[in-house]
Image: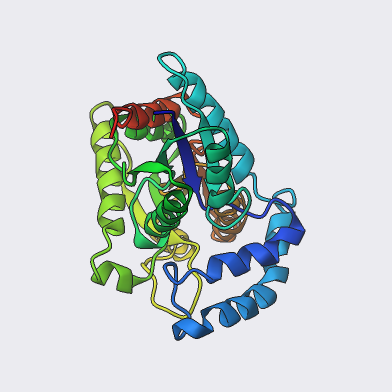
Length: 315
């Protein structure tokens, strides 16, 4: 059976003209945040996209006019395909949830090229119904229509090579920092109350990192915060901007931010952390830096390779 892999991620607008339709696609997904009754989801999403687009475009202008997430994910796919080719030919595709290339486009291409079985690999290390859950649902629905057999890798928050990659990036800056600030994408608190494992898995990753750090050095204290919240619901706290201010009041001078739920650079790292939160820190009279994103870190690619190899046995 001819098998392939598809790397699945959020996606991002690659040009300024793509910002509004990207926002519409994002807010149309009730798995992320329900907006009123179901029949109003898309009309409200359209209004939000129209009103938020100008501010969001301004942010994208500051990072080059578009998100680099697709190009980075393409490079991750290329390196993963090379690693897998040492034993057998396994094509690796890229499918995005809210912008091109959409999951449907990637799966249709795979079908055209003779793929019979496809392994979906979520690039969200931590499972949430708002991210991995929504992506998995679309992936399986489209694959079924196309007659593709599927497997799905939906959570790998404590994979040893993933942890090692993050530790390696932290160690490069650790001597400078007097506090670590782990910043994860936020989630409505209601999701956690309803049993979503996201927060537990975030804390699981952080626990594994700190254990690994303590085996070799004496790390500084750490704090956990959440970023990128939007919408009129209660989100996980503290927010990363509030955490920066709180740490400054507690005497922190050098904050090292560890983006814990992102595996590639995009608006949340390049704008929110590198520009917005750094400016907040500067106003507080303190320094803020972040570790490099995983992107194509060799240990991260090895983690993806290991995850796939475990699924390569026939279904």
